[in-house]
Image (cartoon, rainbow, N blue to C red; front, side, top):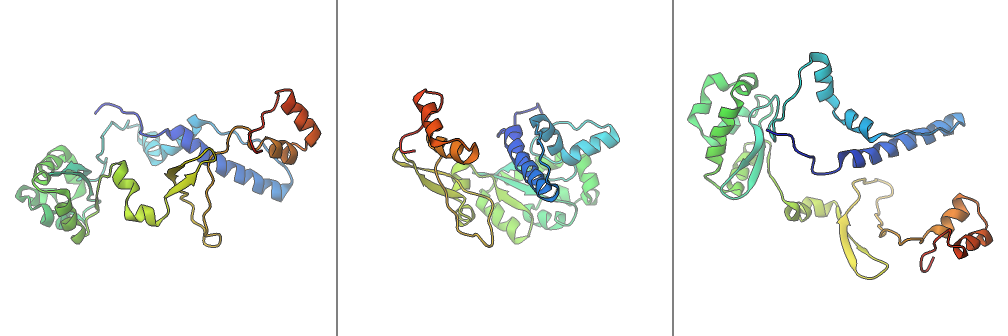
Length: 244
């Protein structure tokens, strides 16, 4: 298929995460050596790094991976499939899950011993997944997922945003939190994926208003006197938010 854009800004988000790791490493090095350093994070470098094993395979073999949509370059079937209502994803990884998967979908042609190994199935991936797609359309997602789960075949519903953000496990993990905004009202936002065993209590604050921390930053970080800060505010060089 044709190339598509990633649904989220990989370079921006990945760059931020690598920046955190870089700063932590630099702080640890400073603690051990007494020497500070500049941490250079490039979004291009981050995206190349996140190519991970796919880049390694290309560099070792010279092969250029082609777009495969939601499929997999090794495992078959491993894809998303439309059912009578929702879309589900199924991941028959290796050969262990193949026999129980066949018991669920009950497609006679797929019981051919020629399809017993992942390597052979990969050769006719489009044909196999086409047969499966036709069969899965005959029943609703919940029915298929119940059978697949009972057979211990990796599978799940493909959630939309409303389904994902109301999932019981997501809510149990406190991954949707509500913040009160200083200008009034509240908003729900994603929670913190970092869960600590000692400092388990989670606290969340809304984004600060413009200038909310001007005085604190210049006093505590820049070592500037309050008189000089006030002069900067009066001259319009610095901005102080209401209540700061």
